[in-house]
Length: 272
Image 1 (cartoon, helix red, strand yellow):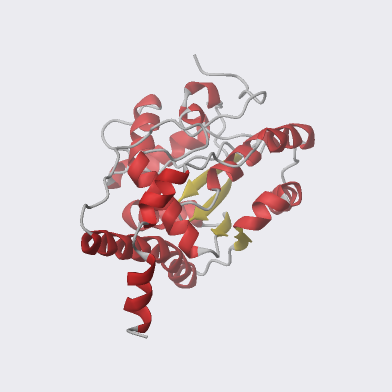
Image 2 (tube, rainbow, N blue to C red):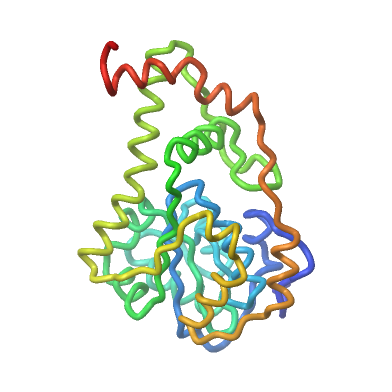
């Protein structure tokens, strides 16, 4: 049964937030749109939890195939919700089933935009939307975090495995090649967004990851003001208090970069 009000007394992970517990059914579609454009490993799910607690939508990766295939059938979409003719009905269903206080909030990566939203439904979604670009300056740590998540299948604080585990190649040369491909993908997500913004005439609110974790209340209030949506300050503070750094598996981080540093530096500068 769909919940009349989402729970605010716990810290949900990305699978919890995809459950029916976080559906709010309304006959009136949400008129406001918030789009969080985030590269991988930028803390976007923490921002989703803060916004949800504050009453600003129920953000999720609705255009990730893994989750679209959960939400779409639940809301009556027949077939793949990310298939061309199904995208507009899918967005319309989200506006009636996954919005809060008149706001549909979406967390999206560039590969999802380029794969599923470069079309009229995407144009409608971004038109008059409040757009955030969540950015992480420390690209080395960012790509390592992404490699760990790909290897372990763990993408959120809870430690639940939510994707297939990708092994590291056995040989050093193969691991270096994999690292450089991973780096190109992660860096390309930000580059892709910036090119997309320029072409689409979008001027996003630019947020650095450290601001999210050091000034969350001010940041969420800023977003609420941009959307002209009141902030549930007490629920937001409670969610922030539940927040804590993701548990770091030191062995997993070591495996992600083991033996790579000197070889990668040599490929940049050559022999000293």
